[in-house]
Image (cartoon, rainbow, N blue to C red):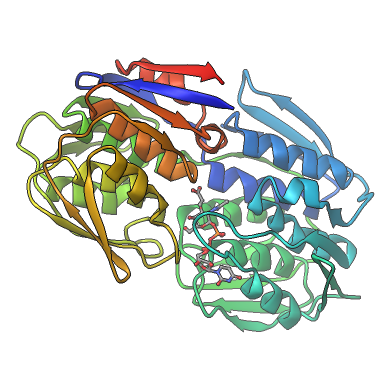
Length: 420
Ligand code: EPZ
């Protein structure tokens, strides 16, 4: 298993360019199943998760051409050869579930291995299935597989019990080819939902309201191929913003969308970090003021993103004063606390919250990445910790951050990758 050895690195400084969004490109790739036409995607990040999604699309009959040098991807599914997402692919990536809605809409059938839970929670798919049923699909679960079948999908009024990102995306894709109108309420409002809706509308779909809590979809008979540039990754953006803060450095972040990271900007400013931005870049200065504590509560967009919780917690362990962090989106997204405490942090879980005692001198230690963002948080902590931090299970990190090492090294970080 490969590991990172992270040395204490002086204040990070310099410029970094944000890659295309992992959580936008994955549903958009799945949406290409909805048409026999050719879809050309640009700003596609070279990630393992994109590779897994490509293989999944190929397994259902897609021709996929990847050109990572130009960050582009071409997908064409003239005929769907299989309506099944096999377990060996689904177990690698939960987002495989996003092919279910498109397969059901295109072929009338979809068979997906039930995605298991993961470190951050059980991650059920009941809201996805409830949406498909509302559109007229029959759902059968057996032997670890779930199957949806429908002679035709008919538009419906659907209320999501929780604004689930994946369920919103899956149901929106299925409803695009349903007969009649679907009104989806209490939906996720993330920028990735808007990017998917824009892609679908370019294919000929008729979707209104993406980015608000209600989306109206007027089904059409068929969709065509199109070209689309994926939005920048707001969580990668937030991760580098926190990197500037925790190392008391000064980083200029290019190809960012400030509007997508407003909660992170607000919270960093509460800590005393100086953040300036224009329409495509963000300058973060952690070296102007002494940094102080603040409180964080994760919420669905436009609230503070759960995917930034662990990175921000690492920062809060180093600032003056104690902070409270409340994770409300996932039921078990505190696995990084034990690892941060092994590095000298003092973080206690009290009910659904964590209390972070600040101004701790972090010390290098052997730690474990438990999920993508927890891994990134440990790298950030390692940049501040005395000595060397050895991080294992780094495949979590490399599945979701393009050119992770080279971007951090370009800012002055000392990180070595070793094969164990
Ligand atoms: C997406 O996951 C992201 N992944 C996650 O990013 C992100 O943390 C999450 O949204 C929340 O913003 C991708 O977009 C590929 P949810 P998703 O459905 O769609 C419950 C990362 O680090 N729920 O919004 O799986 C669920 O258990 C990853 O890039 C149900 O109960 O998230 C969770 O508690 C991690 N039933 C909450 O909703 C359902 O049917 C939010 O899940 C679906 C979800």
